[in-house]
Length: 285
Ligand code: PAF
Image 1 (cartoon, rainbow, N blue to C red):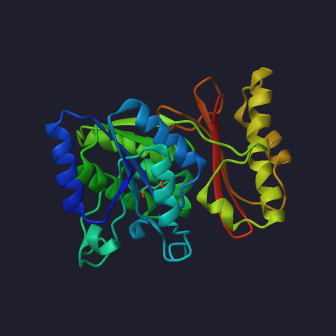
Image 2 (cartoon, rainbow, N blue to C red; image 1 turned 90 degrees about the vertical axis):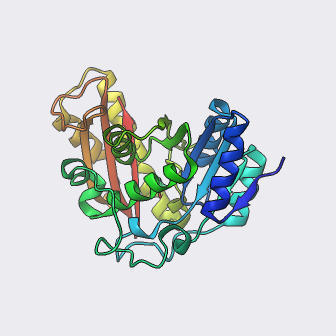
């Protein structure tokens, strides 16, 4: 059966109602489209763990800051639907902003937002993207309420997003199991991202040093080096000087507390701009 494209919330709700009557389990893969092999791995995981798979494709305006790439963000719905077809997803849910948010002004003066705790959003990516995670948490909770999935698959590349959503589900008693999925990389190590399409050849070459720096951290850690400061300096030496580094931090993967001494469950996370393109990547040691 080929993938059905739905644009309306009520159509998704009716489809889900039928599936529930038939006793099916449902997995949701929330995306902003421009699907690539990273998303494909999430869809494959969703297929593995549930009877029905919904892929949402929605470039969510409320998670972009005023000077970010909302207008420029790649929109490739036809190709996205084709990939979902090939992978056997049941539904692509691709609403527009009006369908998701109605006529309201997209600001906290009119719209109800989910606001994750400050100490989690006020660091790493949240520091340079104020309001970003409120927008993410809000749209994801809406998607959970529309699709009512048993499972929702998210990539580990957005480790902070994953942490925030796991907390949201726990704190608000949302009946969804979050499934973290490994980062997918190009052969040379670059973490796959929809934003990689913005990179010129030179910018891509510089961007590649991000995953190289993470590999260096891993290598040194495996040799017994646990000082975050030493690992930081060694990684900086590998990063291209052409990159505009936003952060390189070591945090406990379970609590997101900063660590001075890294250990098995430490997340090493980097955000940097290559040219105008902001990229993130991480490893869990
Ligand atoms: O990770 C993303 O693509 C987005 O932040 C998400 C989770 C689909 C919410 O818009």
